[in-house]
Amino acid sequence: MAGKFEVYTDKAGETRFRLKAGNGQVILASEGYKKKASCMNGIESVRKNSQDEKRFERAETKNGKPRFNLRAGNGQVIGTSETYESTSARDNGIASVMKNAPDAKVDDQTLLAGGGPAG
Image (cartoon, one colour):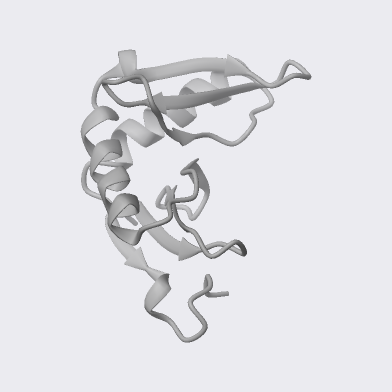
């Protein structure tokens, strides 16, 4: 099963996306956008920048757990990973974003009744 970008409205009324791998696991999540068009631009930026490994910033949480950010050419963070238990799991997450992002379909859940995420 192919990956997909889920577009949804958060509790604050902002539009966000999350990239899910084929197994349904969230591998990258965005910030909140005031405008849906900006969110869609963010998805296109992920598609493009995910193909350059130098755009992935390997980092750690305050308690030392590995995670990563995907940055655009201007240095802005366009997506953040979950927290991982090991650096090898984080590196697998980066590889999964690189593999899934270019061809991932967009699942726009803002069109559903209520505007929130489904399920």
